[in-house]
Length: 219
Image (cartoon, rainbow, N blue to C red; front, side, top):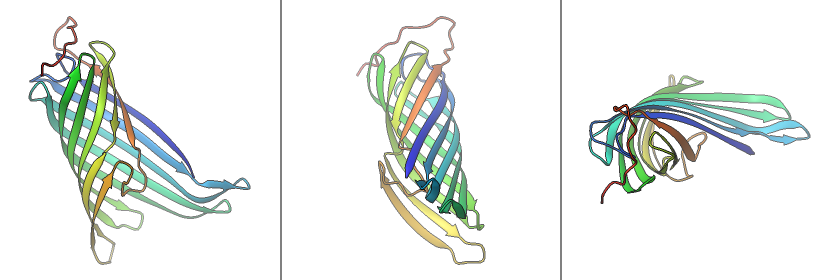
């Protein structure tokens, strides 16, 4: 099965120094696209194709030089199709909409480079093609590294939900409800599909007219 990952994230932050500053607001959003294509045999599709699309705007507030706290809204959409000799024999989708508080901590920094971790507690609701309703609670940790190109622009790479634990309640239309728990570490994710890395490009909007020097957070 061929697999394609495309990540696009744009984040706007209000900061006074290279990393976090007390009293700053951070407004951002991310878009990710994750696709796995069915195998081609004699030029015809066979097997399963998967598509995952997610959009998540965020708002964070700097409560100290190392810590941001805020929240995220998300729309997470999953689709899959099954093929046999080029003919589509079945299809399904699962759409989730959620909200999550986020805590970000910069635990190491040196001039233009910072290491951080995001802790997130998400609550999502949604349905699938056969009208099964879902309620999902997920606690995850995402570490990343941020590189400052200059005082206003930075890029970061994060290991998407490196560690997570969740609970899902599913109720089929006219059927019996089921409850399940799941645990994932790095690539062991209990979803239709999974994008393991998130790449973020950040523009920092500063409250002062003049740029300031990028400084190191004192240990």
